[in-house]
Length: 304
Image (cartoon, rainbow, N blue to C red; front, top):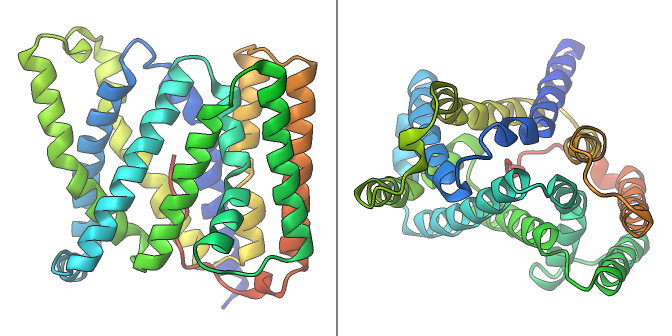
């Protein structure tokens, strides 16, 4: 593999995670529209975009073979449900002023993935992995004790994210093909929900501005573009590179929450995030030291 290919792969992966890091700005601009309505239009527009992508790639024969597999259809239904749940929670969190907690969800996702690897796939954890999991769980318990409630947004995002990755790994479906399958299975409920809102005259979109409608229509391309960039970059970068870059998105979201949106970040939250970042640092150190860091990435990281 030439050096130029590695450079292109790194650039694609970096742009992908950078775009995901800016998503709060995008969804904040639509905060006057309910999250469930945004989700429905995002699914519809993503499906239209995916049809164009698959057509341009000329990969319809491969996509149709997936549709004929009952096993892959079942996996697609499960991952589609997890993905839509993740999207709904994330968009609601952003539009409701919980960007900080949403960023936390993506910080702890890799640690949740380790947890699933042990209890679902029977994987063996290394010492530092056990320590990082223990520190993260301690941080969640501390937050719950200090604030009187469980950080459910972060936990839902991390759980749906990591479970999505698990089923994608089991199903062994490519990134583009898998997302086409998921968006296809989510399309009918999305269209049905939009029709229901319109018949009940409760659709906020019907009274939205031209700019808001433009943003909703663009939700398809801005969802699909990072997926394509990630796929391109992951095929050319090492696991360690992707593993480090994946924290760019939540770091950017964290900075947006604290410095742009001025969300509350008192001492207890600072301590909580410090504990989580320590767990993440140990996770990354273990990743760098592991021989697995030499392998290539072919699996798909769930999109925001």
